[in-house]
Length: 357
Length: 240
Image: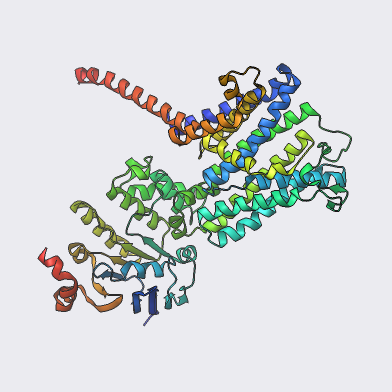
């Protein structure tokens, strides 16, 4: 079996599992489970945005939550002002993309080193957090939308079918939308990465100087990658604002930023399915541990209920023991297994050939 | 006389207090093959870096077909038609041999054509059997071939080779010399090399660098006889 066939089988599997999940979940699960899954799907899109720019573009961005938050806020503010969701949705993608393009322009064309890039993106996120956090007074409003400071913006109207205000998307509809959007993002990114552009950004990640000496301008390629990542994160932010009908400055917080990076580390850089698995796994674990409230006084129960501690341990374990991440490591094992089987089969064939010869 | 392919005027590079390259006036004709020799630290690699936009000269000019490229970016210079094989092979280690060549070829070709061009180049570099292997896992000599393949795939008019024979076996050195001569049938080359045997195999005209300046420029047989050159450079080799 060659790499190409394996690739097609993988794509087919993702497609089948994705569509089955999309169709079956609302039929089999309770509404609260469906709601829970919806937010996993939304966060997985956010994970994919970093999977693209870090895993393939080699740009370590600590500020993915800035674009996520901008998307959520753009949607909320525009929605209060227009009442129809088509333009707010587009704005939630376009504004973070434009912001990413502007920030990226100064970072890439200014030839900022990788470390400073991390510092700058992190700082931008914290600046946004602090700015939005201090807009509690009634004087801070855009149109009729009050920013609400640390209290956030509650009661955000949900998405409707384009052009039809009355046809509001309900909770189950949100699940379908989020899952379909995740599948579309995944396959869209696969297409992008298989294209000439995708192969070149991987080349730049591998050896920027060489790519440059071949005649590619790494700054332009990185800028486009970064902008696509910003647009995707903004889109996820829009869906997130819809899911909870609420957005607050914690969306820009340090915890949120770090979490996205953890999803990608755990799932595996340089893959798309890895960050999705990492994101959903950790989100699920977070919920499961959070639900397990300490009922007794015994130490173990208390310890297990401490979600941040458990997550911290998992992250440290991954960085030390599975540095490549879950999916690439499993892939390596699969290859080893395949190779040893082929070798055994070859060894089994040899004596027979010798006899025949 | 036709305008030279490449010309430098008073080209200089200073790193803090160190003058790495000093007032170099160098010309290369269309289709010429020139060897650069000189002891370590003579400024040969710095000179190459200025020609390819990896370093911006502190002073002076680089003219390629009459255009001043001293302030141009590396990718712009590459697009104008200067390709370089660096001293330590600069390749895409995490990608397959085929993908490496593909990345280079797809800069100038598009669509269906790329794949055919890649196949031809793999064949020419003797890499067809290793096409699917990761470049990072190849032996040093093979990585050199991959890099040469990359450089040739962008079809530059002028090719700079920084120690192409370094770390190669005797047979490989011979093969490389053959290849250099073959490339020279259609392209101009500047080759930095320490291996005198290799230089004898390929060169007609040689430029000797010493302490950042051009010491002497002459035909290869005169250079080998030049006592000054022997003193600063060849003496060590001849004794070895």
